[in-house]
Image 1 (cartoon, rainbow, N blue to C red):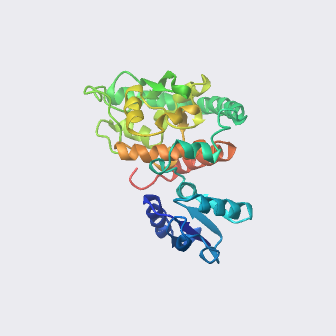
Image 2 (cartoon, rainbow, N blue to C red; image 1 turned 30 degrees about the vertical axis):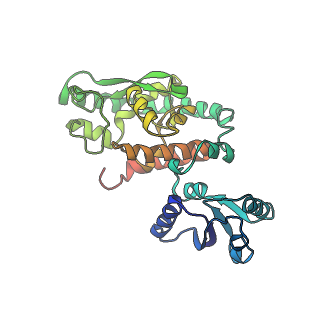
Image 3 (cartoon, rainbow, N blue to C red; image 1 turned 60 degrees about the horizontal axis):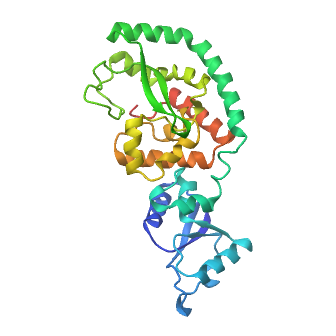
Length: 310
C-alpha cells in the first residue's frame, strides 16, 4: 500500500481512517498524522515530516507558508490532494458536508460538464439501446400488464411528475407495482420492503421490469439510460432545502439507472438521501463513457446476482 501523510484534523480524517480500516486491502495507509502548521517556527512543515511518504492528504491549512510549501511539493512531483478528494477516490462519494462551493470550483472537474461532447454520444447510445430493449422486452411487458390487471386491476401504468435536466418537469412512466391507495396520505419515499407493493409488483421490482416503460422517456429525450434518478417535484423541493448542492443533480439528464442506484438502491431517511447525493455528485465529476459502461455493467450484475436483502 502507498504511504500517506495527513495534515490537519476534522471529521473527514476520522471518516478516512474508518474507511481504510474496513478495507481488507486498502490502497494506501496513513503513516503519519500531523497537526495543521500555524506558521510558528516550532510548527512549520519540515522535510522530516514528509520522509518515506508517497503523497500528502490535506485536511486543514491555517497559514500561507504551509500552502506555499505544499504547492512547491506538488510542482516538484509529490502528490498533494485534499481530504475530500481522497475520500471520494476511496468510496465513490463526494462528502458534501466536508466541502463548500469553493471546492467545486477548485477541483475543475465540473467546469466542462455542460460542454462535454459525451452528451451527444450518450444520446445516440441511449436511443439505439432503448429502441432495441423495447423491441426485445415487448412480450415481457405484455405479460407484466396482464399480471398487474389480474392482481390489482387498472391502471397498468403509473404516471408521475418528475424533474429532468435543468429542473424541467416531465411525466415518468412505470408499470404500477403499488396498491391504488398507496398515496392517499400524500407522497412518501419508497423503501426496500414497502408494504404497499402487491405480489406481482414485488416480482416486477425484483427484476426491475417496472422500470421498462421509462425507455419511452429515454426515446423522448427526457431521460438517459444512466444518470441520477429523477425525483418528484414536491419531494425534491424539500430535499433542496435540507441538503446542500442537491440541485447540482439537474445538470445532466436523469437516468433509468445510475451510480447511486448500483451503490445504494433504496433510501427513505434524510441521511440516506445525503449519501445518495454524494454518489450522484461523484458520477457528475466523472461523467463520461467509462462510468456509463460501468453503471450498465453493474446494473446487469445486480439483476442476475441481487444483493442480500433485495
